[in-house]
Image (cartoon, rainbow, N blue to C red; front, top):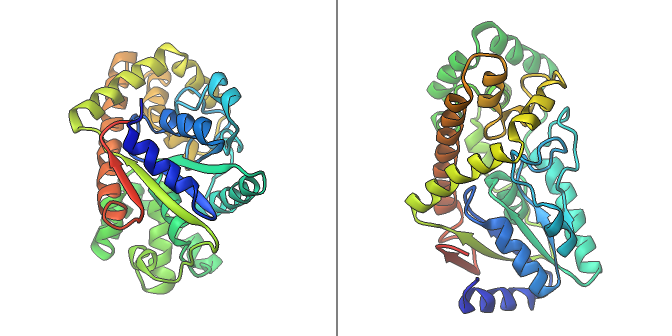
Length: 311
């Protein structure tokens, strides 16, 4: 049950002109439940800011809100795109701003919830304008990726853009090649572009932010228990259906937490328990990175802001 201080903060947020309430935090921290409770209490609409919950085929493995939550209050941007498409930050931002505007027209409070830092940053601070990448450079970057592999290209990226490379896994083909082509086309690092001031916050919106920051041990335990619950609820079958689509390996939906490990199990590379153990480990590591992001990018910078250990 949310504390009186949290309720008071949310009440004040909802009273501001152009109010948007943002609920952020690491995976398995209780964001969705809190957003639902606040939206129900304040007459709000829940808007998804999780980069994987946008995909139609990923319901169980992304812990998407279930039928009861969807009936309780309106939910937007959940399962709105097929897994065969890639949802960029810019694409999500356009959809989110449309749903925020629609909520305001309906007299409802937009409650934006998620842990995808780039989405939340783009919403609250604006999206920095990256230049168009010439087709020749884009093709050359992808040719190099195919020639030497993502791990080797990641190592080369680390020599030229250590800040971006540190945020990326060596197997993250899509983001590695994106950072590389920006370097090749502009001579500037992607991290440099993203630090720029070219982004413009959307006019007329007043953001109030709640960040969930549970103790590390409790968060990791929650990550483990949630993945086990996903398997029990049909997560393996969902991964099998996703595999049957024969999607291109670079598509974001195939990078969702648990999906790479379960695909290895389905391919006969790992037993189910070994795959599950690796998936739990990946989830905990991702949660740790999210905690770091919120600490450095939001806490101490957003205003007004409320940090709570649990909802």
